[in-house]
Amino acid sequence: MAAAVYSIGAEAGQFVNVTDVIATKSLSEAAFGYATSIVSSAFCDYSSLTIASFTNCMFIGQEAFARCTALTSAIFPECLSVGYMAFYGCSSLATALFPKCEGIDANAFGGCSYLTSISLENCTTIGASAFNNCYALSVVSAPICGIVSERAFANCALKEIDLPECTTIRMSAFQYCQSMSTASISKCQTIGSDAFYGCNSLQYIAMDDVVEIHNRAFANCTSLSSVHLVSCQSIGYSAFYQCSSLTTVDLHDTVSFVSLMSRDAFNYTGILSENGFGRIIVPSSLYSRYVSDSVWSCFSSAIVKM
Image (cartoon, rainbow, N blue to C red; front, side, top):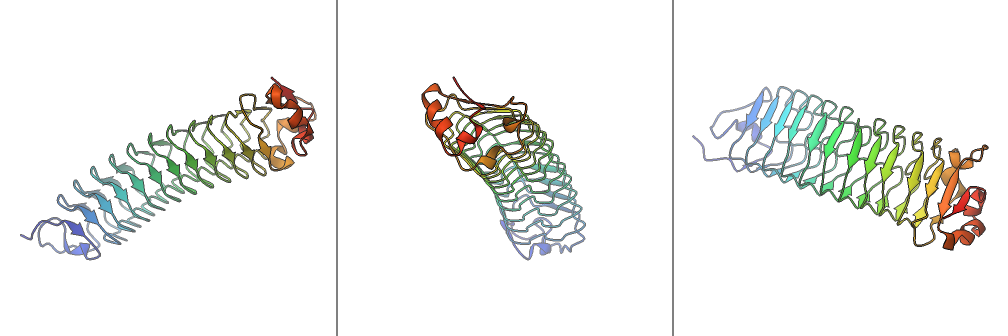
């Protein structure tokens, strides 16, 4: 019997567990009780692999299980970090257990189209495109996550998100999550360009601490009827473009003037409705500044003070 395996690298096919058994890419189950790390391409393209269970593994390297198209279960109770494209294209993956994971790298689970839920209780950072094109992913728990990177959950089936500690949502992070109806991101300060673009079921969003809303952040969110901004300082180009149900923008709790980059931020919304039902509610102390501002004045008929 060989010595315990503490690291599995590019030659991982030489080990099935801690014995000197030669494995090929026809391996169906990988269960290494003593492995503490798996590095690049260790099981990449193992088309027959269905189960990966590593009870002591703490680090998974890039493309470690990429394109293991038969993989249905990945169980890593001690894993702290999932590397770049580690499970990319594992289109049959249904169970992914990473209770201690602190960081998910770019494209780590991209294209895992069968994955429906994942719990990331200790994760603080979710990388670019980490779950991009996980078309069935409807439930994510990430209570201490602070950063959601570019396209992290684009094209997912998320029904709602609750990210109580998130401060930054980057470009296209939730783009085309067309089943999402509510989003709670109360501590988020920056919402990147296209972050919620095309989330056409989004009806409610809590974003009390948001300071910056970038270009097209909520464009084509056609079910969104109102937004309440408390800390906002700037709204980017086309930020709410084609939010056809949007009739109320509530700024009355803001302390300072909110800069509006362009009139098109509210193009094709209820704010510009010919019926005149749209309202932009501003603090009484700032009313005169809003109605005289070169951009906000385009909506002067909708601006009311409180």
